[in-house]
Image 1 (cartoon, one colour):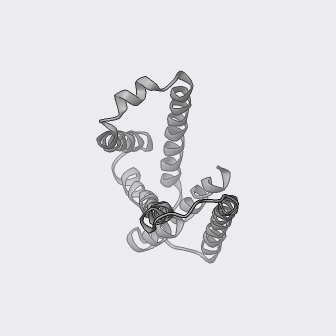
Image 2 (cartoon, helix red, strand yellow):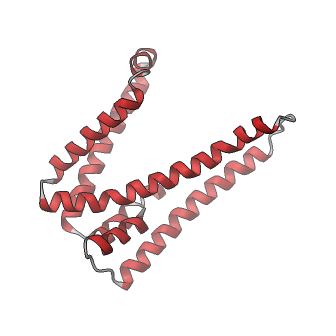
Length: 173
């Protein structure tokens, strides 16, 4: 997503990119790729040790397809998250403050997610214990803090600087 953000910042927002920013972005992307690749290899090595019985070709495809679907979902997420900083940069600089923009973002995100979970939400809420609810509430608060911090940073620095730094969250988590 830093590459998508940098592209959009340069093309649509007329931001300048220096050699230092370009090199920093490449190092950030390389670091994230290294961490993710190591995790995938570790998971594949663990699965290689498991023995499975002979299965039909349809069942085998279903077993492989989650990986393909996972990569497609990750790629879609990278494009979506890469687009957010450029959109937010325009919103916080031209229309509103970071806290108001973050509130609208979270409201519309909540509405969109509600459309996906509407059928299962009441049942899932009743069946889950207090600990998962507290963990999700805490993660929601931390997500809100992260969004407001990101939006505030976009009022003070160009997208081509903020996005690579923000993408380091993959290394931290």
